[in-house]
Amino acid sequence: MASHFLPRAVFPTLDSLPRSYFLGHHRAGLTKMKTLLSSIDLIIECRDYRVPLTSRNPLFEESLAGRERLIIYTKKDLGRQGTAADAQNEQIIRQWHAPAKVYFSDHRDKTDVRRVLKFAKEYADHAVSLVGFRMMIVGMPNVGKSSLLNALRLVGVGKGKAAHTGAQPGVTRKIGSGVKIIMGEAGTEGVYLVDTPGVFVPYMPNAESMLKLALCGSVKDTIIPPTTLADYLLFHINKIDPTLYAEYHEPTNEVIPLLEAIARKTGRLGAGAVPDTEAAALWMIQRWRTGHIGHFILDEVSPQALQQHKATLNAQAPSMNQAIKVEKERRRVEARRIRSL
Image (tube, rainbow, N blue to C red; front, side, top):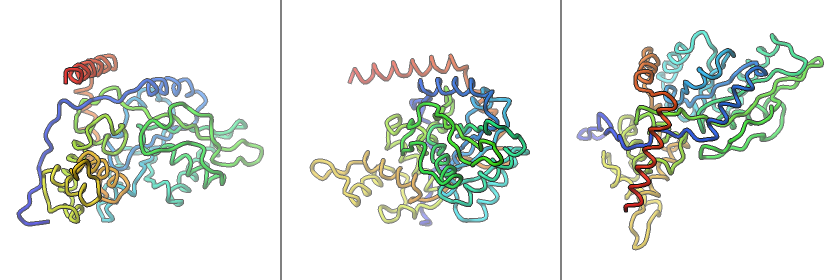
C-alpha cells in the first residue's frame, strides 16, 4: 500500500437506498415452509460466508422453530484469505451457534459435501423412518442453496442437477418435491432434501446491510445502482489491499476514475469511446463475486458481534406490516420522482 494513501474510515450513509427485497414469492414460500414443518426432520439453513451476520434471516428462527437446524456457511472459498485469521473467524462463528452444528462449505469441494452427507446420514440413522428422512434447505436469496443441493445429490447418489441455479437471485421460486441425496438401506427410503426459494427479510433497517447483501448477489443488480455497489466494494478493498486493482489504477477512494480506467482497459466504451462506468461497475462487482478481486468477509466477526447485530435489529426493526408500508411508500415516491424527470 502506498505510504501516502489513506483509505476511507467510514462509508457515507445512504438513506435513500431501498430497504427491502421481500417479494411475493418470498412470502408465499415462507408460508408453504410452515405447512411442511410437520413432515420435516431437519432444517439446513445456508448463510453466505462473506456476510455471516447479514445473511442471517430472523424469519427462519421465528417461523420454523421446533426443528433441529444445521447451519452451513456457503461460498467459503470466496471469503477465506488463506491466513490464520480464517480459522479464528470460523471458531468464533461456531461459538455463536454452540452447541448446534456448523459447517463451512465450498460446494465444489467434495470433502465439504461428504462431510454434510455424513452428518445427514448419521442423523437419519437415529430417526429410522420407512418413508424416508426429509430435510429442508432454507436461506436468503442466492446464498447457494440450490448449488449445495445439486452437489449433495451428485456425490450422494451420483445423479445430475435437480435444481436450477443462476447468478441472480430468484431462480428458485417454488418449493420443490424432495430430492434423494442418500440411498436407503435395509428397506428404508433414504434421505431427501427439499429445495425452497430464498427469503429476504421484510425490512432492512441498516442501509449498509442492504449494500452487503446486494454486493453478494442476494438482491437483483437493478435494485441498487451498480456504481454505488462498486464504490462500497472499493471501500472494503482499500481496507484489505488496494493493490488488488493495481493493474487498472493507483490506490484511490474515488470510484469513478477507477471505473473509467477499468472501462478503457476492458473495452467497455460507449459512443465516442466514452467509458461506460455502469458496465465497468457491473464487471468489477462480478469479478469480486467470482473471487478474482480479493477474498474477504464484509461483516465484523468477533465474540460479541452476533449479540450486537441482534440488538441492533431488535431496536430498529418495525413490524412486518409497518415494513411493507414503508417500502410501498418509498416505491411510490421513487415512481413519482422518475415520472417528473
